[in-house]
Image 1 (cartoon, rainbow, N blue to C red):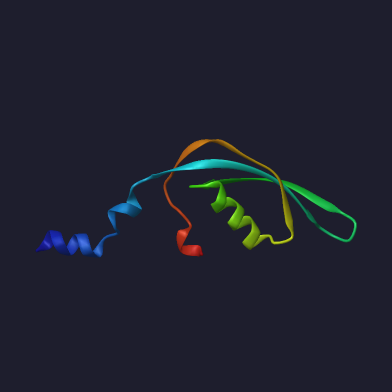
Image 2 (cartoon, helix red, strand yellow):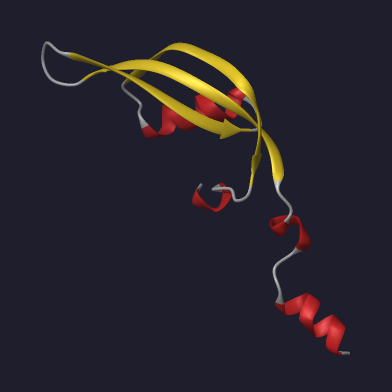
Length: 84
């Protein structure tokens, strides 16, 4: 009985297991003010390139992606899936 209660009250095993993700580097630009353009470089850990593009378009709709490349694989200890 005690073991089953502990299992139910604790976090799920899927959440405590580190996940493998891809590390992306994104270079983009957006209009900062009337005649100025801001260029930035950001890094994201995500499962797919589509996930990165969807995130950038939803959070920064006026930005233009100039370059997006995969730098390698990383181990992610926590995710932001609950922030959708």
